[in-house]
Image (tube, rainbow, N blue to C red; front, side, top):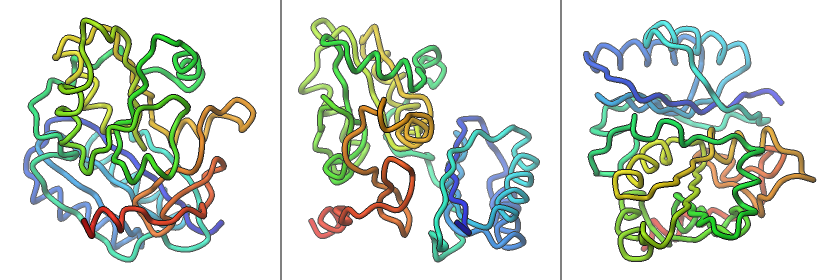
Length: 248
């Protein structure tokens, strides 16, 4: 495999976004790294692709820019997974359009082994925090499809379908963890007492879990040229169902 695909994010207060944007774009250009980095006052979010060497040098620069240690999810592909080099400044690094306190979600993260235990609990509500076209490609056993077209529709689904007095335990998951990082504290703020989020999302779960132990069914939609990845994080065979969403 020639090219490494990584995804990473962090919620932290940022300022001087235009300066950061220029520094990140330079780092992408210098190391032939392609993909997208989103920055906002609340943090950063990225999926990029390059050679192993290029990714390593790029990550070192990113850690220097943000003065942090990056936790990333990694997979490999025989071809470059992106065509462009983009750094975008946005209002949110993932658009929930609700004010939430990220720190309220502290203590809700669970690892892959614990996640399997939660899925086997018959009282657990397992909610896929992704969109309908992602769910239909693959999901966890027993997971509820909220049938959303965008992440910001998820609060409405919860309001109409879940009750914090009745549904005592809620486990949520998404592709790389960032949506749950926002939605776990949102659920806590809505009165749901026992909330769990899959740390690192589906991508880390597939990286850490053997096929024998995996409770994942199907393939995982990813936002690059591969469209989907299989249980081994290799390019999958599923159709791009997001095309239907974009036509709607």
